[in-house]
Length: 69
View 1 (cartoon, rainbow, N blue to C red):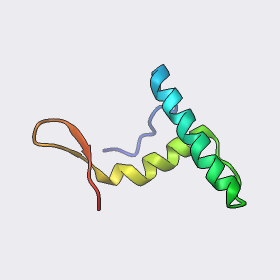
View 2: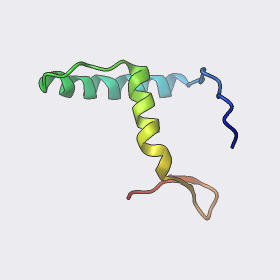
View 3: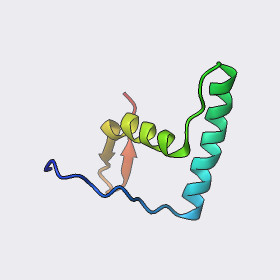
View 4: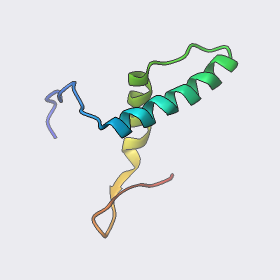
């Protein structure tokens, strides 16, 4: 791949947006309990991508899978 920057916009379905919102609420509750700053939904998505992309593979059946270490 080239070093060109990708679009900064990603369209999400209503269901995906709600799933992210719910996960952000869950994680932010835990962060607050630990005395840490909550994170915005977009920050959470960036962290999830950063942590999971190295483990994304194409299965033999053509389905995208996320492998564990």
